[in-house]
Image (cartoon, rainbow, N blue to C red; front, side):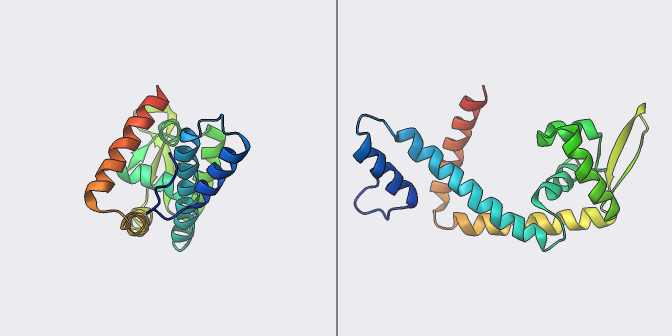
Length: 169
C-alpha cells in the first residue's frame, strides 16, 4: 500500500520503505494506516493545545468544559458521568475540576437528585469560554481538512467510523 508515483511522500512512507528493505516479508498496510492516524492525532492535538491555551485552559480542561456544554441546559453532570464521558479516572478528573473551579469556569454543588452526590455545572464564564474555544478548535480542524474536497472528507469520516467501531468491539 505504498505511495502512488503521483503522490507526495510523507514520513510514514520512509518508515514503510525501510521495513520493506529490511523485512520484505512483513505486510505493513496496518502500519501505514495507524502510523498516519497517530501522527495526525499528535499534530492536531498539539495545535489544539495551543489554541485552547489562548483561552487559559489545556486541551484536557477544555474537554471537561465541552462535555458540560454538550450536555445541554443546565450544563451539569455528575463527576462520575464526566469521568466516563472523557474516559478518565476519578482522580484525574478531580484535578481538572479543581483548576476549572478555581478559574471560575464551573462550580460543584450537591446533586439535587442524589444527596450523596455532586453536580458539576458550567458558570456563565465557562459557557462563554467553551463556546469561543470550540469555535477556535473547529476552525483549526476545518483548515487541516481543507486539503481534501468535501466528498473525500465525508469518505474519510465514514472509513474512520467503521474502523473505530470494529476496533472498539
